[in-house]
Image 1 (tube, rainbow, N blue to C red):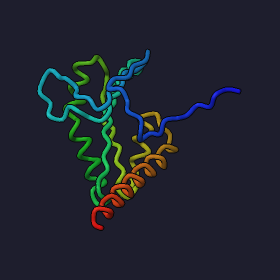
Image 2 (cartoon, one colour):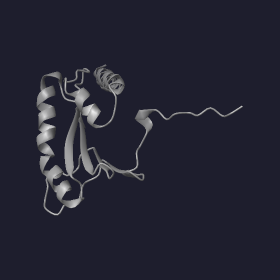
Image 3 (tube, rainbow, N blue to C red):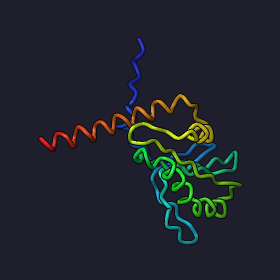
Length: 149
């Protein structure tokens, strides 16, 4: 009988700051050193796809429902300078900013599906992301309410 593989829950997983394979390099929550000063130089994730010669800057945010579209636009604008600098420095043809925005109550913009496609992720992951956000929101509310007692 083969031993059963136990999968680590996502909320306990701590990724290495740099992951690499033959095709891609992934930087996790790490400042990107640039030739010129870029204020917003620490996105959540940067993926360099050497085969496609492109970089993807991924930043995740969980705003209030009212700020969903604003937060998405802000992320795109915030990392625009970094995207240009990455193209100049890392021998890639393009760098795109991919905002992942889910409101604290689980709302998503229509553009989330498109952003997930850019990352080669199917729409199936959207429900898992919403569930993770809702569970964390509930955890924060429970913690707050226990302080009130």
